Image (tube, rainbow, N blue to C red):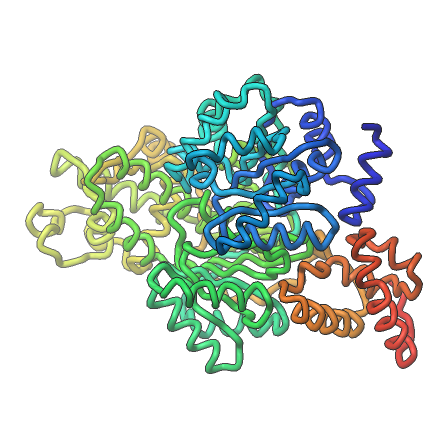
Length: 610
């Protein structure tokens, strides 16, 4: 197809005037019949990369997805845009399943969403041939890799599709994967010389913050109340905590619900549905929640507890701001989380698994305690370089951490590690090192005679947690090295010995949290100024229309589309049709109602300039 044709389809069905980065190249590769590997972060527009080719070619495109909860929302959104799409999964009764199967045999659909376990049932592959399948798209492709953060064994069976359909183009999509996982996806799916597309992992509209967790319930409530109309997710490490937080928020007038694997399946489904439809504003959840959520207007994600690894953290924060508008990602950090997570790791019986988990935790702690740009730290984890000195959208760039002359503190800690090894002939763990520095009277200190060392008790200027923070920074500087395995110890490294000998000055992060007034941030990427009062009116109309149709509000229009309406004040069908996100079907179905609402608003309120 010509560029004009693709652009025309883009506007007619999805209401967009231009493609996002890489989308058009990916779509052209699909239409040329090539296999493709696509790594594009959440909110980057992956779905369009297989949906638009399905409209531009004859036959059926099969979308393999593990997310049964998400299929209905995706199909509802496509049908509301006039795209003939359907899904097959266990939620359908027999009569509805037969009706959809008949439609597939009659060629009524261009897109079919199906779970991997359903796809591999007896007779299903024969049906795909009869339905004139022309392409296969595998969503959440990282689920096929044991090196990924969400490995699912049933995904391994998908490779059989390649033998059954050797000539069809296969497309693999994922939002998060390290170099190792990317290679594994290509191998496991048997992609043939695939066109590879790796978009930037940078979610420019997200602001990253790490706050010291002191009074978490108060901190959570204050943060939620900062954004009184917005949806958000609060991730917790335990089921009980999700319920306690949800109860606390409800008692304080915030509509909240809990979600975790221990709840009855119907309760989970009901709470999820309430969140998607904006009946509940805040979801307090374990990591069991979120992968199947296609809610674009989540404005904040709070991590009450320390995540196990950066990949999971990136995935969870990525559920904020999928519509491209600004959103906040807040991590409440407490050093006690490190000890708790380390305890869980020690329970693992496999030494290799233990080593991997410990390394992942160390990376997560480094991210939490660094004074460098958090965006740069996240992107480096995914092998991407961030060139800007100041991202303008993380706490370290907006409010740089206080530092102090840490020369003496570092000398004390490194010297203590040296003296302990000198006396005993081997190294000890972080806790023991800190006990010696702070003059702790423990059985181990007395047993090994470390209360007789010259470095015993010389660190009374800091408490234990502060010394642990200093030790972790010295690990990041490679002055100390933590060994892997069950009996992990701290070793003085060659770099640490060289520094002790050189006695050069050293600046460290202030281990106690400074009480500084928050500086005014720069305008965030994605800010879209509009008439906020009109935006609220349009949001209420959207809620009513969505309720009447039994769909989530964002299926009617996204927040981005409403903000464009509240900025441009379209009161004619022609003007409304030019709005971002308004395709032909939505213009026909909703144009009169929204233009009437805008006209009514303008009768009582003046236009604003933006």
